[in-house]
Image 1 (cartoon, rainbow, N blue to C red):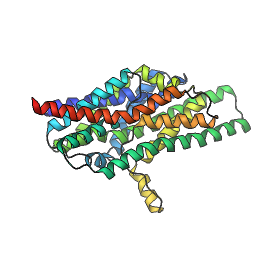
Image 2 (image 1 turned 30 degrees about the vertical axis):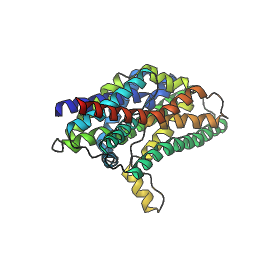
Image 3 (image 1 turned 180 degrees about the horizontal axis):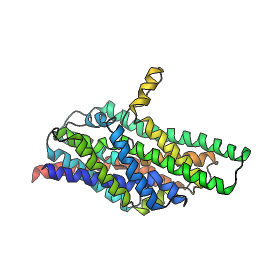
Image 4 (image 1 turned 90 degrees about the horizontal axis):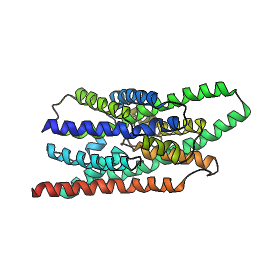
Length: 329
């Protein structure tokens, strides 16, 4: 049974890498400043680094949602998440493994009539709303600053292209680190809650390997949706979007940031898993607002935003249904 659960974890890791490369390097690839192969390798490498160094910060929040007791519990959650992720991926809609797993957990709780910590759920969902808003604000401010700098300090096109390539790669690396740090707990946490004797380092390394393989098999259709279809982005705008996404994700991922804010008697960010696809779209909207709202394709944006609300509901309903079917067999 543990082998079956482990296979489910690996499939989710693969799906995370496959569907999130668009959020890490979608704008860079879409603006032709970074080729797809380079983006795949860098994403696979630095998602792994982030998971190993900072991957435990959000695990406790995930485990507090549901009290898993048997391998079947985890299998139902993972199967629900995998099915929903696969459907959305084929539709070209950026989706988050975080939303599918959290939704499936709540559905599992409802089926078993277990108490759900709705305050925690409110905190998680609130973070899902605030993270894109923060990314939009960061992107808006950065875009205004970058455009002003280019006006008053013009540089040659050759130097600008070189600088932008470096900045795009750097911001993508930071975002990949944040993704590994923030999201891996949604997969390793439930597994370790049931198989607590399994070496934590081993399961982390195994999932990271699966994420890396997923990055190398990224869905070009999803990359196109984020990189070009939502709003046409220049290389400069692509860098701003990626950096805004990375900074916002790090705010909800790092214990160090939480400690610094507490020390300064400032409000802190909850250390909860964040859907990177939401944050990325928020950053792109911030760029559009900085340009006066021109170029934003509202039909594509509307389709993506609607998916944010229906993904957890679909995943939770599917989890509930699978539990019902399983108990009748």
